[in-house]
Length: 78
Image 1: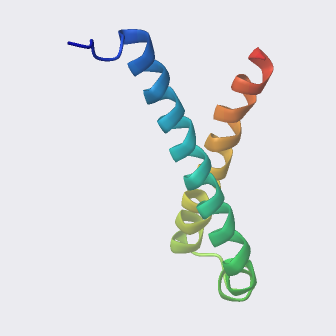
Image 2: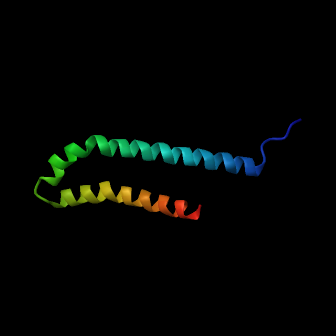
Image 3: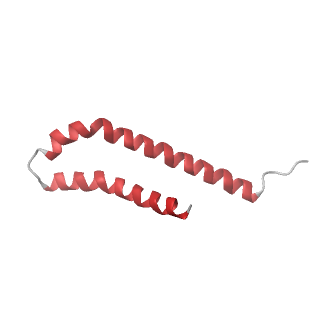
């Protein structure tokens, strides 16, 4: 009988899958931002600023900020 994968192999595979998922979600998010920026400028930035506008802006750009903050420490460790 052969043994299954060791704990370190399982952890390495999990970390690789997690990194792949992070890259895919980051690329998808960046693509969505690029294809919708023109609409955003017209429909949000040129309108009167209301509470809904502020909520939209915070929701949209807080995510970018969080992703950058997550990537920056990982890059600094290397």
